[in-house]
Amino acid sequence: MTGRPPTSSTTFYDRVEHAVLQAGLIVMGALHPHRVDAKQLDGGTLILLGAGKSFWPTLKSAPEWPGDHPVDRWSTRVVGQLARDLGAEAHFPFGGPPYAPFIDWALKSGRTFSSPVGALVHDTVGMMISYRGALHFTEEFIIPEVPGTSPCINCPAPCSQTCPVGALNNQNFYDVGACHAHLSTAAGQTCMTGGCLARLSCPLSEGAGREAEQSAHHMKAFHPS
Image 1 (cartoon, rainbow, N blue to C red):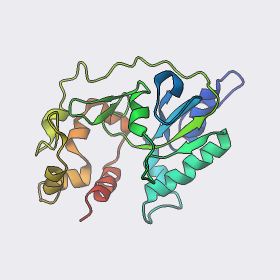
Image 2 (cartoon, rainbow, N blue to C red):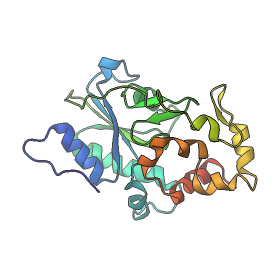
Image 3 (cartoon, helix red, strand yellow):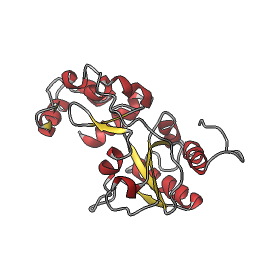
Image 4 (cartoon, rainbow, N blue to C red):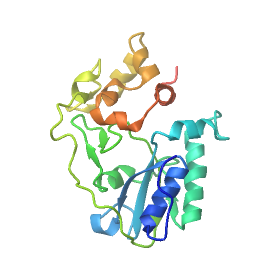
């Protein structure tokens, strides 16, 4: 875990971020819903939470591991506890339908953008995005300003050239059938054990600190054998 402990001079946002880091997550964005016309929220402050470098080892030492759906069960418990401790309402990107509009919230945070192949890209974890929940506070408090400029502007877009079967592309975004078919072949085991090659090719994806074991877990959930 990282993060400077709160002091008398830290802001409420700093305190939230510290608590999030201590729980094994990272803040992936913050927004004032009414200022950006965020879906399903009227006001206050929304903090988006996701998986960072400490997420995987934290999960593997938790009571939810291994079991069924350990990531979602862990997220429910941990984000729920953060909400109770900090006085917020918890939202999750799973458990629907209906589903909370995380894509809308992410894009309106100014830290997440559409990549050249349509998949989301984040300013610090690249295309290895994993939102685990969000905290909605009724109060509107100060949040960091962000440039709001896509990191893809001056990027040579390796994501558009790396997928062996062109499943992620700028024509129809995501050819799920082609992806699944490739993953069922011997050649597709590289993606199954190490993660999506297109997403890994994003220069910013290294910032996620994603372990191959974690990627393999998500790939198996996406494409069970």
